[in-house]
Image (cartoon, rainbow, N blue to C red; front, side):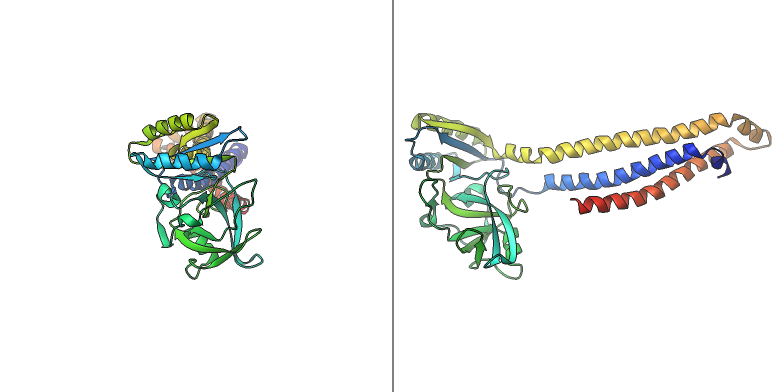
Length: 352
């Protein structure tokens, strides 16, 4: 301690460096853990054998309703297709609409914001999502949505398990009525296993399916689940069919849900890799700083070391002395760093 007090600036600077490194390291570890958990959470749908294809047209005479029906009939008849549906939302993407529902009228009771996935009676089969309770949509309940003509009122809805428990935490949601801003009261007819739908709700698992086809919406998306190993063959067949059956149509994109899943996780993955790289660099700099301080102290006290050796000090006594000095600096930095880590962690939690 006396030796450190003779030149405290270096020890203080290294101690502060250790404290800052520890505080940053602890909070980066927490952030990286959160990101990795988000990457590892299950999608809940078949992303390996499912693809989506968006179709549109600039022609004013293009009949979207007839094109949808034709495409669905063709795809469902292909031997490599397990199920197909039409939607205007995109699972695993920030594209689509959202509603806020409450368990009681006038926005009272429990509330949840859900991403909306319009689909028909084949939607759950296409997503490969099972029902936990209730029933699926019936074909007669599916109505077309149109920008030109008013759509029939929405009367039934299917919620994911998480959204249903948020609205009705103490009982089954099936058969209950929920209330949304700007829509009629809706009856919950089914509850599904959690899956990631359009990323527009409060949670990726807050999703609602409604019985609605795109009709004359101006664009529709074919969602197709193929049998194992048939994905690319069915994609090629779908492109050929649309090119021949609808000369006025334009295929906006065709992509696998697996690619959407990777795109959804890209930001989390890149942030985690960047933070790990920053942590490694900071640890290396901190280690070099501690080593540099110890080497400087040794070189500055060569006469003192010689005197101690002359009066009988062993080599390990000299090493222990300088190791103890470094340990004191490290312990002081670790103590200060623990306080900083807690303070920064609380601040980050309040700004999450």
